[in-house]
Length: 480
Image (cartoon, rainbow, N blue to C red; front, side, top):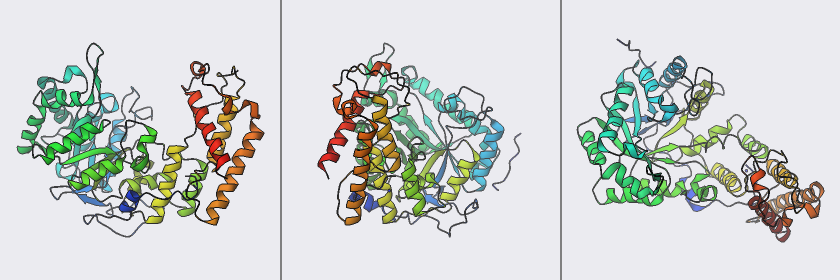
């Protein structure tokens, strides 16, 4: 028998005005938050974790443990690696999280190559069941799991792997994603929803399980097609179903600029707003945008450090992710102890962002979404260009200027300091461009022939990037 143990300016854009929806979110703190004084750098606080209340009045930690990146015995993340998980290290991480106020652990059948639920079950079953909330999902993605029988097997297997009689949180996994049938034919997202959860009676069954207490909170994780998201909320409006929580992608870039990163995405300001209107608690995924909001350029890091020298770059993203009052928990996939400790510091307690800080993050997001670096390694496989363009040098100059803070939007030049900064950066880019790349080898000579695309090992759409950079250069020449 298992022995129980007790819980012990990214770039300073020239006047990049903040949109109204960010201002709405500024400084919002939930009436259900637990607030205490901050801590000194290096200390990992105990008993100071910010808690939010779910629909049943239960207190949930604002930091949730996302169990998709557990460490392997080789010391790597088990998310994509087909390696044995390090159960001893996982136990240590879970114990530490619980001891420092983290009480929600989110997993799913596919996480860690199908091994996450089992590892979570081992780690959590060493603690009293009342000390934690466990969350998992019905991941019936493939067509051969869409039958009621196969979906039921997944549901029962999750409880068995997690060593629990009931699930605190259960979600329809990957709502909004399309699929393909056995013949490879495309199935759109709405049809997938219908066949995965409605035609087989699984959603009605899960609602019955909730009524019987075997599921305490029923929700869905949203990825993709906004029509599916809106449809499920409409069903609640019509009184046919109700959702206890919804998981969305949310960070300070996706808040207003999601479509610039991916056309099929929807801004999280809309997603959050629709859930807030219905008083549906929100789970957050991708607070760091897949790690990209940790790997900001040097100028962005400098700006954030000037504002708060002690705060980690990741902590800015996490503070934003928890800033809205209906956010119940922010999931972070923490492989290493230092990740867990830093996130605990950020939320012990959570300090809401003020207007100035929100403006800074919105400026970072605006430039990040509109002016992304080109992932060129300078290998020169694309050379020679039939039209004489020095492709690697064009990319290198653009990326260098981004990193140094010399790529600006030029919008809203409403005071003398902003105008001076814009003129300085504009001159640095244009003069540097002419020095780094002869005029006859610059991006404006690209005709889009596509000769270079097949040669690029990074898969860069080189003609598209050349057009983007040339458009920016022409804009700088006009906006002086």
